[in-house]
Image 1 (tube, rainbow, N blue to C red):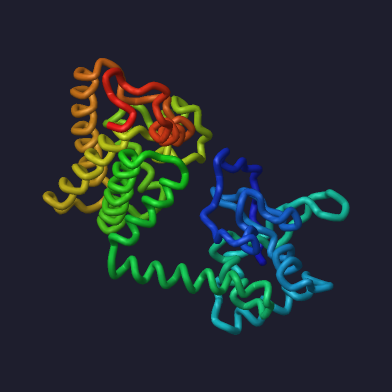
Image 2 (cartoon, rainbow, N blue to C red; image 1 turned 135 degrees about the vertical axis):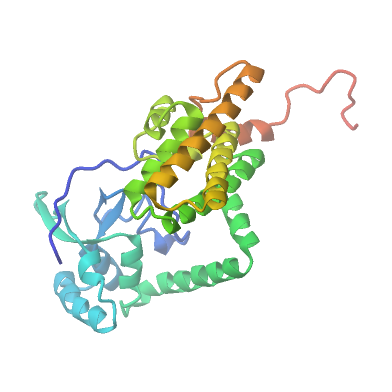
Length: 313
């Protein structure tokens, strides 16, 4: 595999990937099998392929197993294998020193696991089949995807009201990103630039500054720490950008920047109007920790009954 320049990177504090729940499928969780080394690289976890093979096959020589397997996987048609498995430095289990080793992110690793003829790999294959079927059903009935997201956030402890706003934001975000890609934004950097334009116009702070206000690390998901009001205003601004793009048939980054700037102005005007009514800033230091605690407060029974209300009324 090709060698990449590797910088030391820090994973987000609350990084807990969405993975199978069975005990046998804990390779990708924050509490993954300690035999499997991983490193945070390019904003995601990369796992040692050799370590995964050692766990799933009990091979006496997992390095040799992987060398032969690379050829077989390529012959199966997975030509991207060579570019999707960078060599990253990880600490050796034996001498504690750092050496480069073939690594893969979750998507690539799951593809590799499909080609491992081992009973231990079967739970992964069954899980992939189940997830694939669920996603196909969601293509036919988008409401299923909404229900899945709602259940996910409910399990994390968010309130129903917040979940409703978050799901709307996800849908709006998906649409505006597709608009940008289809109208001339050709890289993640350009998408980020347009996002910042809308966000700063709406909140008077950049996304990075917003993270600092909420005491979050740079690579944390800001939207999962937004209040319902912040989410609603962000959705308004991005939806305004979409409408402007379509009404004007905007093409190219100059047009998209102009529309994004105007959409930010709309969001900012709405925010200032709200602030005048509620008497305090919309941008809040509240983050996911407080938002997840809110459901528990809602579920707790009151210590005292209201005066004049009987116990069985």
